[in-house]
Image 1 (cartoon, rainbow, N blue to C red):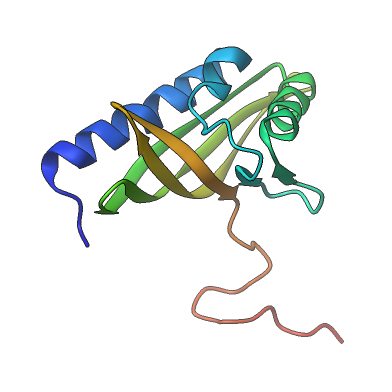
Image 2 (image 1 turned 90 degrees about the vertical axis):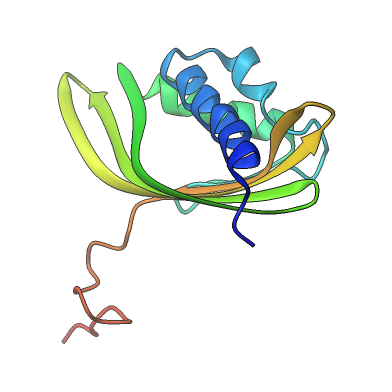
Amino acid sequence: MRADTETEAAVMRSFDELWKAYETRDGDRLLSLFVPDGDVLLYGTGADEKRVGPAEIRANFERDWSQSETAYLSFDWHSVSSAGEVALVGADGAAHVRVEGQDVTMPVRATMAFERRGEKWLVAQMHVSTPAGEQAEGESWVAPSG
């Protein structure tokens, strides 16, 4: 169900705050925007980027930062749905990264499950990845090689 205006604004404030903390490499602030539960989940683009629990999630962000000079994500479209104390966000945007002195921009998609705890909307699950570049537009599957 589409979130009401007030819920959407509150959830997107948390969403935006998370990405600002990512950009400024503020691990404490970033982690404070996730539920502190042991089953909090992050999926990333890398084959090994399945992180469960706050410590693993923090380690993933720290790895991102150690492998880049700058990194931030910007989003140009989003949708927010909610039911009770849970809100779901889908967003399209771009990752802007400087690696070894080279600027790279790539498309990203994010889906996030937020849970309201008190007055805060916190991330309970997060998936951020890049669309499959080898999959042709209009096709459901990657074409077989050979």
